[in-house]
Length: 242
Image (cartoon, rainbow, N blue to C red; front, top):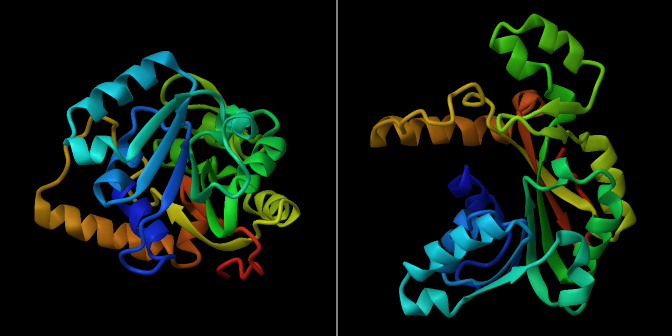
């Protein structure tokens, strides 16, 4: 998924442009390090000390030139105004975070404020309109039926989480001055795969990624994706990719 998201983000900027990227809730730093290797300047924010330690350990294994492009900050995505000036970043990533935030609108407004004009707010959220897909495809009929009437779910880590709807987030992005420009579906054909499943051989992996990418850009497939990748642009006009 990290490669797919990186390509969708990079496609919005001129080839070779070095971006100032804020990765909020970066976890172990997988996405941050991929972007740093591509030449971008990364600031990663993480509140979980264990995750932050893992990110620091992974960064320590990188060459000095990459380490110089990465700054790691212990903090919460809801406090970006404390740590960063308005307009400080070209890209703000908030991937796999909103599902743990009960009231996401104030946090999103704060993330939009630290974007430069024309900057990209990249969100990856659990798709509330497709919550029944995973249990249904797995034969869990009780779980599928319950998912139709709720935006709450228990994730694979056993944690209670919350899904988002495209229509609601579109309205939020409009309201904070970073209207939705386009959106993608993520994990359409692969959502039921086990977390520890080995990667396919190179040839098959490329075909899998090509199929996921095509479906993630195509209706009606993207609408039933497990995750949604939304791209809002600071000061944009909001084509919404439909």
